[in-house]
Image (cartoon, rainbow, N blue to C red; front, side, top):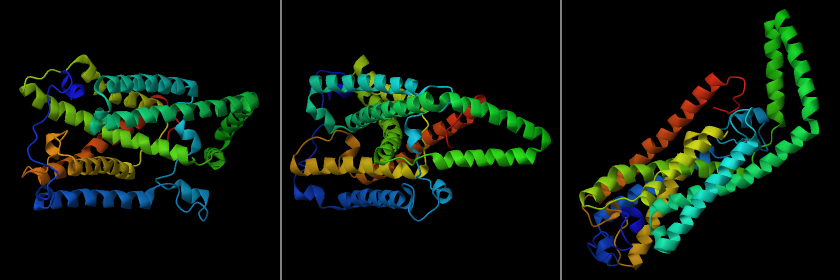
Length: 347
C-alpha cells in the first residue's frame, strides 16, 4: 500500500482479522444482506440501461422521435468542442497531453509497486480515466480529419452562403418576426437531420466518460474524507506522488468536461453502479480463494456493521454522480450565458 500511505512498499497493511477462505465466513446473515445490496444495485442498473440506452428502435422511429431519446448521441459530439470558436485541435491536444501524463503515472506506479496495485479501486478508476483519454485522443483525431475535410472542401462557400442567409434573415426580421423564427427552425431541423448518430466507439466513449465522472468523485471523496483522516491518526504521511494520484484525475476530467460537447443523462449512473459492483464481486472472489487482508476496511465482511457500510457506499453513488450533474448544469448555464452565439452543446 505504498501508493496509498506514502511509505515504503509493504510497510503498512490492514490487519487480517479472520480466514476469508472458510465457509463460516461466507455463509451468514451479513454476507447474505450485503449480497442483496449488490444484486439490487446491479438489477437497478441493468433496468436503467436497458430502458434508456442508445437511440431506441432506430429502424422504426423517425428522427424527431429518436431525438427525444435520452440515450441519443451524435457522432460529432464526441470530438467537437463546446464552443464553435474553438478548433477541435485544441480538444485533441488536451486529450493527448492528459493521456500521456496519466499513462506515464500509471506505468511508474506499476514499476514501483508492481501489478498488485490493481487490487485497489483507486487504480481501477485511474486506469479507466487513462483509457478514456486514450480513446478520446483517437476519436478527436478522426474528428479533426472530418473537420478539415469539411472546412477545406466547402468552408468558403459555406461562409458566403451563411452571410447571404444571414442578410436575408435580417431582412425577414424587419418584415416579419414570425417568418424569421420559422426559417430559423427549418434551418436547425435541417442541420439536425444531416448529423449522423454515433457508432459503437462513440457510445463507449460517452459511457466511459460518465462512469469516470462518478468513479473519480467517489474515489477522491473516500480517499480525502475517509482514508486520509484514518491514516493521519495512525501517523502515516502522504507524499507528493500520492497527492497527485488522487487529484490529477479529477483535474483532467473537469478540464475535458469544460471543453467537450458530450451529454450527461442521469440514467447512465447505472454503469457507475455496475463498475463498483464488479469491483466488489472481484474482491469477494479473490478473498474466497485466498486469505488476504481487505484493501479497504469497510469491505471486510467479518464486521457486524458490514451491511451498513455496504449500503452506505451504495447510497454514496447518488450524491457523487449528482455532483457531476450539477457541474454539467453549471457549465451549460455559464457558457450559454457568456457565449450565446457560440455555445453548441445539448443540455
